[in-house]
Image (cartoon, rainbow, N blue to C red; front, side, top):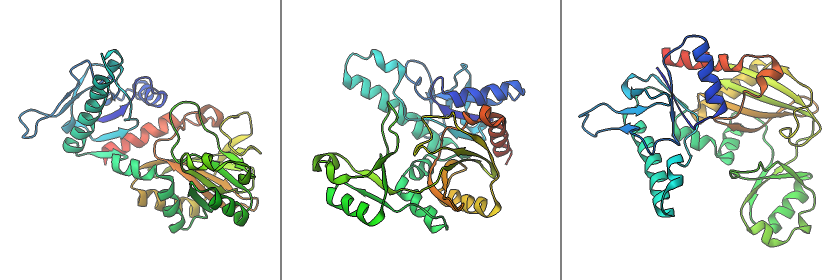
Length: 311
């Protein structure tokens, strides 16, 4: 059985569930982590007096002992039921206790395969840590500074040349796109001190690779654009890109070091074709490439989950 932890109406969860239904694969279930509150969703006991169970999105009660694979898609979300709480304190209580109970019982009672484990997912989402691991595994990575010091940033730009800036983690809401930082001396000290940011060597070139790794299955897209950040405009040439064996081995080594069973990786190719590691998102978006590449990515991902369940 495959169990997905996600939020209500998550596009990727719905698409993989639809693929499972279309193919007649019945043991695919979803726990909507933002709908734990307001219904009888969870049960767990320390001494096994009763089985650990979760209520799925279709109203089925599933015992965790019957689950082979847990797709850890989305977890951090406020409860829809908490919106009607009488106070902020009650709202926080509902949100925190629902999140804590679900995470705790899964950690205590689930014994199958994670895609990927909460610990690995959180650790790998750390951009600084993943850069260090990628470099240790033989990738070229951009020279990077994380700082709140205006002086350090100015010196970094002086030594490095053209530099870009992006958030360390970002926040929910409008996307914060990567930007050039050409003249940090024109920016006041208070702006740097507000919070740390990632200052990074600009890698020249117009070829961006979006590499989707589902276990050992890799599917990559080549996105050709002069834009620094390709995400705002997908009306550019996008085509399938063959992953060379040496690159596949390095990617696999990085994901293994990070403890990830899947990852959505951004790589940039220099003008002479050298792949430069930018980052990996443990649960990144990949379905937008399906119509652009004519590639059945939902089915390929479902195949990966089914293979994990059979392991």
